[in-house]
Amino acid sequence: MYTAPLKDLRFVLTELVGDATLAEWPDFADYSAELRDSVLEEAAKFAATVLDPLYRVGDIDGAQWTPDGVRMPPGFKEAYRKYVESGWPALRGSAEYGGQGLPSTLVTAVEEMWASANLAFKLCPMLTLGASEAIGLAGTAEQKRLFLAKLVSGEWSGAMNLTESQAGSDLSLIRTRAVRDGDHYRLYGQKIFITYGDQDLTANVIHLVLARIDGAPDGTRGISMFIVPKYLVNDAGSLGARNDVQCLSIEHKLGIHASPTCVMAYGQKDGAVGYLIGEENRGLEYMFIMMNAARLSVGVEGYAVAERAFQQAVAWARSRLQGRPISATAATAGPQPIINHPDVKRMLLLMRSQTEAMRALALYTAFELDTARHHPDQERRRAAQARGDLFIPIVKGWSTETGIEVASIGIQVHGGMGFIEETGAAQALRDVRICTIYEGTTGIQAADLAGRKIARDGGAALTALLADMQAQLEALPADDATLKEIRRAALEGVVALGDAGQALGRLMAAGPEQGLAVSVPFLCLAGIVCGGWLLARSAAAARRLASEGGDQEFLLGKVQSARFYAAQVLPRAEQLRAIVKSGAGSVSEADAALI
Ligand SMILES: Cc1cc2nc3c(=O)[nH]c(=O)nc-3n(C[C@H](O)[C@H](O)[C@H](O)COP(=O)(O)OP(=O)(O)OC[C@H]3O[C@@H](n4cnc5c(N)ncnc54)[C@H](O)[C@@H]3O)c2cc1C
Image (cartoon, rainbow, N blue to C red; front, side, top):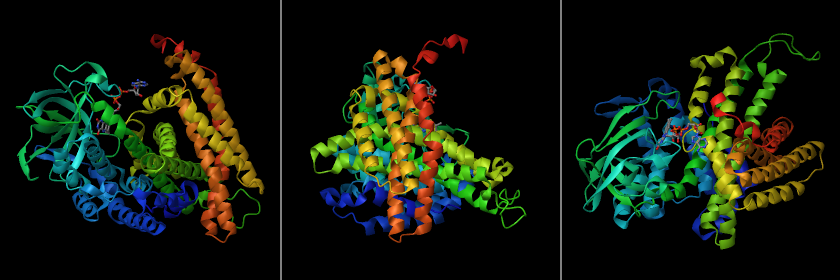
C-alpha cells in the first residue's frame, strides 16, 4: 500500500526550492500554493486508488505479446482511460496544444507519485511526453497539427526508438536506414528494447525513430529523427492504413513486467513511412536537447521506488515481533517490534534519509530547469541552465544507484520474508534495477559529468555550486548542538567535493581515460554531498517551523533524518574523495586481458 509523501513534497517545494518564486515569472503567473496543493492532492489520490492497486497484478501477469499486438495486464486499460480523462497527460504540455503548461518543478513532484505507485505504468506517459517534446522542438507546423494535440492529451502514446542490437550506449553505430520517397521517407531496420513500442491502451502509437538517411555521414553526425506512426494519419487527423511497423516480440525481464519492452521491425514489406523531424543529420542533437527532462524523470524513478520500499519496510518493522529489548530499563520483556533494534532503526534511517536527500536534489534541479527556460532575466537563465546541466547526471546516476541500495535494504529489513515474492519487497528491487541502465547507464552519466559538465567549462559550474553551498551552509543557524553537527558534516562534504573536483580536473586534463577511471566514484560523491547540503538546510527549516508550532512529528522526523545522514552517509564522501585522489593508475594501468 503506497501513500504519497505529501508533507515532504510540500516541505521541499516551499522550504528548499522556494516554489512561490515561480508565480513571479510571466509564464507561470497563475501558479500558487493552492494550485500546487490541489494538483499534489489529486495526484496522490490517483496514485493510491488507481495506479497502486495495479502494482502487483502488473508484476505477476505482465504485458503479453500476441500476433495482433501487445496486450496490457488486466486493469491497465481502464487505469489509462481514467488517467487521460482526468487530464494528467497534459500537465506539462504546451497550452497551444491543449496542455496545462505547469512548471517542471510541480510535474516532477507528481511524476514521483506515478513512479512510486506503478513504475511500469509511469513509463508510458513519460515516453509520450518525450515524443511530443521532440515534435514541439523541431517538427513542422503540419506535424504539430497532426500529432501534438493527440499526444498531449494522451489519446495516442509515443515511443522513443534509439537502441539497436549493435547500438546501445554507442548510438553512432545505428544502422536503421531511411530512404527518401517523395515528401516522406521509407524506413528499414530493427530496434530493440523499445518501451511501450506497442500496447492496447491507445488507438495509435507515434514512434520517434533514429535512422540514417542513405548517403549520410558515418557516426553520430549522420543520424536523423523520424516520426513513424503505427497507423498513418489522414489530413483531417483520422487514422489511415496500418504502417509497415511491427512489434516482433517483447522481452522477458527482471522487473517492470507490465511495461512492454519491444523488438520493433520497420520495413518488412514496402518500408515504414516516416516523416523527418527538423533537418537531416541533426537527430542526435534534438535528442540531446530533450535528454535533460528524460534523465531527470528516470532519476526521480530511483527515489520514487526507494520511497515505496521505505514505506513497506517501516510498516513491516513496526509489526514484526522478534527479540528482546536490549535496554535494561525497557518496560516489556517479550518479543518486541523489530523497529526497536538499533540495526533495524539504522537501516530505516538510511532508507529514509537518502530518499529525502534524493527528492530534495531532484526537485531543486527541476526548479533550475524551469528557471533556465522561464526566468525573465537572461543572466539568471544562463546560470540556471549551467547548474541544471551539472545536476542532471548526478540526479540520474546517484539517485538510481541509491534507489537500488535502498530497495535492497528494504528486503533486509523484512528478513527472510523479503526474499519471498509474496511480500512484494523484492519487486521494488527488481523494478528499480533498470533505472541505472536505460536513458544512459551510470558510466555514461559519469562520463557526461566529468567531461561535458566539469572539464569542458574548466570547472566553472562546479566552482559556482561549491561557493553557493558553502555560503548557504555558513548562513544556517547553529545555535543547537544537532544543527551545528549537521552543518559541520555538510561543510566537510563540500570541502571533499571541491578537493575531489580539482583532482578530477587534473586527471581529465591528463587524458579522459584517466578521469573516467574515477568518474563514477566522483558522481556518487557529488550526489552525497549535494544531498547533505540540502538536508542541512532542511534540518534548519524544520527546526524553525517546529519552534513556530508546526507539525512536530513530521518536522522532528526531518531533523532526525538529517542528523543520521550527517553521521552515517556523509562520511562516505571522505572515502570517495580518497578514491578520486588516488588517481587512475589502478584502472588505467590494469591490463584488460588479465581481468
Ligand atoms: C527495460 C528496458 C527498456 C528500455 N527502453 C528503451 C527505449 O524505450 N528506447 C530505446 O531506444 N532504448 C531503450 N532501452 C535501451 C537502453 O537505453 C540501453 O540498454 C542502454 O542505453 C545501454 O545500452 P546496452 O544495453 O547496449 O549496453 P552497452 O552499451 O553494451 O553497455 C554495457 C556496459 O558497458 C558500459 N559502457 C558502454 N559504453 C561505455 C562508455 N562509452 N563509457 C563507459 N561505460 C560504457 C555501460 O555503462 C554498461 O555497464 C531499454 C532497455 C531496457 C533493458
